[in-house]
Length: 232
Image (tube, rainbow, N blue to C red; front, top):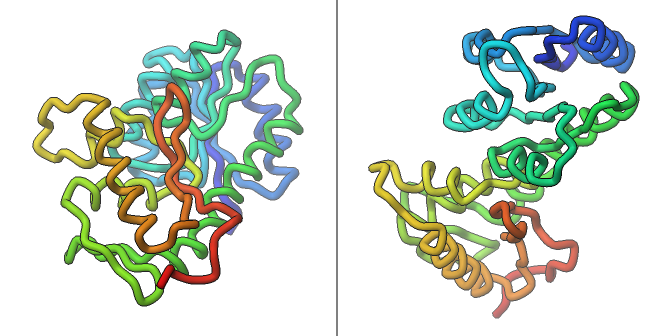
C-alpha cells in the first residue's frame, strides 16, 4: 500500500496542488481544512506523515503540533507564511520534523516528504544492531558491554531512540521521562543527558550519539566515526 500523507491546509487550491504532486510521486493523500478535525483523524488512522499549515481555522498549527506530540511521533512538516526565525525555531521545538515557508515549490515539498520519511526509516536498523535498551532491567547494551541506567536516564534514552534524527525539546523529554508530572527545570534535563552521555561513552568512547541542538533540545543520531566495537 502507498504511504498516506495527511495534508492539513485550508487553502483548497494549494492543498489540491500538493495532493496532485504527492500522488504523482506514489503517495496516497488525504486533506483536512479545519484544525479541529486533526486529532480524531490521526487517532483513527495515523498517516505516514502530516503536512501541517500553521494558520488554520479552528486550531492553530503550533497548538496542534504541541498536543500531537503527547501521544504520537508521526513525522510532521510545517508549512507556513511565517518566515521569522523565532517561528521556525518554535515549530521545531514543539516537535516538527521540518519546516517549509510559503511560497514554495510543490516539487520541493515532495522532496522534503521523501527525505523526512527516509530519515525516519534508516536509523532504526543501526539502532537495533548497536545500542540495545533493556528498559525492564534499566540497562543499555553495546555488543558484550552494558551499563546500568537510572529510571530517568532510561526514559530519556528510550524517547531519543524512538525516533532517531528527530529533535526532542527539553519540554518533551521532561513530559516523557517524569510520569508524575513534577516540575523540572531545563538544567535538570541537561544534567541527566550529561550523565547519560558519560555512561554511553563507557561502552564506546567513539559513540557520539546524543547531540544537542542549540536553543531547541536533543536528538539521537550515531556518528559516522564510530569504532568497530566496544572499548576493552
